[in-house]
Each structure stands twice: as structure tokens, then as C-alpha cells.
Amino acid sequence: MAAPQSYFDESHQLVRDSVRRFVEREILPHIDEWEEAEEFPRELYLKAGAAGILGIGYPEQYGGSHEGDVFAKVAASEELMRSGSGGLVAGLGSLDIGLPPIVKWARPVVRERVVPQVLAGEKIMALAVTEPSGGSDVANLKTRAVREGDHYRINGSKTFITSGVRADYYTVAVRTGGEGFGGVSLLLVEKGTPGFTVGRKLKKMGWWASDTAELFFDDCKVPVDNLIGVENAGFACIMANFQSERLSLAIMANMTGQLALEESMKWARERQAFGKPVGKFQVLKHRLAEMATQLEVSREFTYRQAAQMAAGRSVIKEISMAKNFATDIADRLTYDAVQIMGGMGYMRESLVERLYRDNRILSIGGGTREIMNEIIAKQMGL
Ligand SMILES: Cc1cc2nc3c(=O)[nH]c(=O)nc-3n(C[C@H](O)[C@H](O)[C@H](O)COP(=O)(O)OP(=O)(O)OC[C@H]3O[C@@H](n4cnc5c(N)ncnc54)[C@H](O)[C@@H]3O)c2cc1C
Image 1 (cartoon, rainbow, N blue to C red):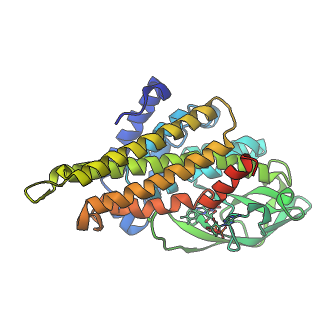
Image 2: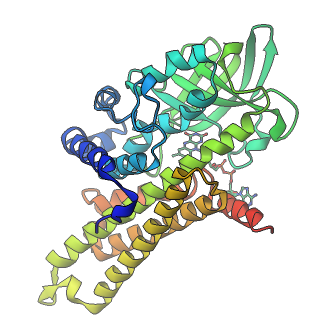
Image 3: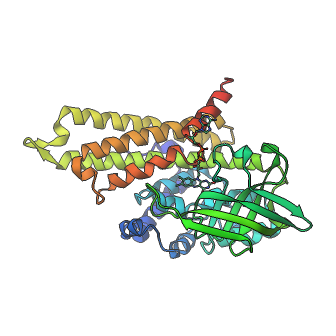
């Protein structure tokens, strides 16, 4: 099932081929072991950096390539998902939610030091917005940063932070002003800063290969230069950042559905029951046909929004729709794939077992299904 050629040109195909080779060489031989260990080697960041994968979509001056090229990023994300591990993709790719605010809005002195290290895979980047008191209501976050001369003093905590244990740099959402969205700012916090500690690695339903952590700030002092953008204007930065994250999550969901369909097709052809391949039973044939249809529609709609974003158009409503649609379809496809594979679909050795667990987070992270619906309804004037 080839992607529509109109969205991808030759340079995107080169990106796709090179990321696919990287996944086949560096990830697939080890991924089952890494999933069970709930960790992949830190060295993989360096390898992905050296292969130019981490830099896709970022400015050349910092070691990136294909700056702002949405479909280069889509092609790379799709191929990384061929690892069959959402956790690995989320962990290796945590720079894609933490770094864009630094690239766009950090002070030059910070940007020029941090961005090249992260794109080279020498340093790991995380984004810390969610707090123990809640993640959906970003405008009411509680972690406070008080300006005292040439630094901010931070107190509070964050939770569910991807790459939280291993990261070196954290883009942290804090309250520098009054109540509501107008009092939120972004600050860069570095590992090792006094008053900043990382809590336990959290156990999860899926995304095992990624580390997820709690963070604590106890009179943690960071220089004023670490302010990202303008003080009290952080909320708009966070919301802008969410747009590309939601596209990535929709792409991850569509690829999860693709892998689930491929595994189901293989099984339907090979597994025999009542003297014929199970895929010859009409009920399974029709289910596979419906799975393929739902996936095509979802992928096409997602690509369409990616194309709009590539053209610089605002698709706040549509990208929320794409995320909800794609994650919903992938939930159904992974459920169906487990069913089609019977008992084997429930076994740890089956890829679909992991896909089923991993997909569950996609309608929660980066804004829940309900929050997406709130955004869509608001854009509809409701
Ligand atoms: C594996 C994993 C990785 C994550 N990685 C990161 C990360 O790297 N950085 C980060 O900052 N966060 C991260 N998160 C957090 C994630 O973004 C939040 O879990 C998510 O935004 C939801 O927040 P919450 O869990 O606090 O749920 P809550 O906000 O407490 O919501 C609880 C329920 O209420 C619903 N709800 C809330 N408000 C409304 C409303 N207005 N209308 C209708 N329903 C509503 C929600 O949809 C949900 O069903 C991660 C989470 C997980 C599980």
C-alpha cells in the first residue's frame, strides 16, 4: 500500500530509504530486548544523530537538514515506526517536542549551545508541561518561577515526562505571572541544576522502551537567559508546539494501523482452520477490507493536513480531527489484529500485542481525545 506519490518527492524518498536502513540495521535486531529491558541504549541517540535522523526538519546551521520540510519529517517518522515500538520512537524523538521552542524562541546564547548538541545526539531533550494536578488544563499549571535579579527560582513538580529520567535539557512550562494562560512561561532547565531532581521511572501499560519520569523543583535557580521567548507569553508557544506534536501522533497512529494490517494479512494467508487459510473466511476478508479502508481514509486526511501545514496554513481544527480520527482507527485496527491472530495475537512474541498496548497512549498524550473535541467544537463556534 504505497503512500500517494503526490505528497512525497524524491528527496523525501531518500530520507525514507536512509531511515529505513537505519531501523533495519540499528533497531530491529534489538528492539524486543530493549522493550523487555524498558530502555534502549543511550548510544542510539549518537548513532541517530550521526546518521542525520535527529536533525531532519531543523536548521542546517545547527547540524540539521530539510528545515521546515513537513513531509521529510513525516517520511522519517513513518520509517521509525517500522521499529514496531512506539516507546522507542517517543524516546528517541522527545527532542521534537522539547527542542522547537528553543530553536524558535530561546536566547541566541542558549540556542547556539543547546541545539547542535541535541541534534548530534550528545544531549537528550524533554518537554515538561504536565503536572501531578493535571495535564489538560495547561493554563492553570502550578509550578512557579519567581524572578530574583538575574535568575528564576522554580518550585513545583511535573509528571509523565517522556525521556524525563535520561534527559539533559528540559523545556519546562512554569507560572511566572498571575492566574490563567497569561501567566505562563517556558524555561530551559539543565540536568544537574541544584534544586532540580528526577523521580522514579514510571511503569507503564505500553511505550516500554521510553522512560517516563516525575520531576521536582525545590528552589531550583536557573539564569534569566534560560527564558524561552517572552515572559508570560509561553502559553501561545506551548499551543503552537502542540500542532506539530499532534501531527506526529496521528502519523504514529496511522503507521501502527499499517503494521497491524500487515501482520493480520500475513496471518490470514498462512494460518489454516477447517482446511483453508483463515483469510478465506468471508468474515475475516471483510474485516481486512474494512481495516484497509479505514486506514487509507485516515492516512489521506492526515497527509492533507500535513500538506496544509507545509503550505503555512493554520489547521488547528483539522489537526485535532486528524489526531482523534487516526488514533481511534488505530485502536480499532490493533484490536482487530489481535482478534484475527487469535491466541497468538495475545502473546508477547507477537508484534500486534505491543501495537495494541502502545496505541492506547496516542489518544491521551499531546492533548486527550476530549480536549481535541473541545478545540474542534470551539473552532466550529460552539
Ligand atoms: C506515556 C506518557 C508520556 C507522556 N509524555 C509527556 C511529556 O513528554 N511531556 C508532558 O508534558 N506530558 C506528557 N504526558 C502527559 C500527557 O500529555 C497527559 O497525560 C495528558 O495531557 C492528559 O493529562 P492528565 O493525564 O493530567 O489528565 P487530566 O487532564 O487530569 O484529564 C483526565 C480526564 O478528564 C478529561 N478532561 C479534562 N478536561 C476536560 C474537558 N475540558 N472536557 C472534557 N474532558 C476533559 C480528559 O480528557 C481525561 O479523560 C505523557 C503521558 C503519558 C501517559
